[in-house]
Image (cartoon, rainbow, N blue to C red):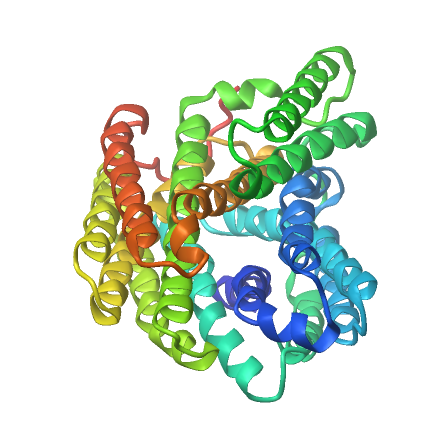
Length: 455
């Protein structure tokens, strides 16, 4: 099977993972009504998946490096598919949230391992195009999730937002089991650093939990600050352990490499912006304009298309221009689009602004992945992919937390001033990040082959 077909299969798996973040959000009212769930439980239907997905990502990436990406990809996809069936069959809160936890575990194994396969399979200009497709799936999947969620919730019922993963997952699993090469670890054989994995997972999960709840509790609330402080302590303990142990989970020096630091900054900002504008747009259309789930989903179709177009365009030019101008231009376009959504009222103007912004965000995703993965050795591909994916989840939690605080009045249903403030803040963040990208993103074009053994 050709490497492009392999990319298509891996992309289908990744698409399901990304889809499952936003596809659930639009179905929450129906889920709550059918199962009689409180607002707190409904929050955990989203948060449980995000916590496990983000918290275990570094572990999943490191496992791919140590045990081979093929094993981890297949295991992650199998867990995710089985968990989707469990979640769809849920008849109460325990089974529903438990299924979402298992989905998050499967996703955390699959996502970084699949991305590491992509980085090893493609080289040079082909890698840039492949990462463009991968980024388009990520950004487009989030927007399409709103559409698919609306269609399935309004049609066969909310259970099908989970059931639809089962046949797709089984087909992709069968095809990937034949298509994936039987890889062996590239680096020296080492044992998995279980204490390090526990510490970094606990730290990441605690930090994401703090961000998820900051919107409701307040950024300066004792609970928020205390939880963030707890995450910092866990990260400090992780760093100390990594310096002391013989076979650490990760070489902390990878974070000091400029491409990795710049790429993780870009993915954090791009994801925060994407989730923020999708969140604001969905609430604006449903709560303020009174649109149903199906109509809202259809209005997000141009947003999905714009994201895919932006990512594809970036993937084609980044090899010639380098990541710095692509990142800066993408974030500048994102600023223009979200500013338009803030300045001009009406559903048409908001959807148009979000779509323009999404095209820029799609380009920023490609710049982020290309920058991060440009100078990592093969035996670090899983770890670097895990870092990228972890900061993606940090960005998602941060984006929702910030805009839910800024737009709280409008989300509660009183006026549109909160939405205006939310879009304005997103535009300002994108503009500042565009300027920072010119300073922090390396100027060099991605090297041919795009893999060096820098340490």
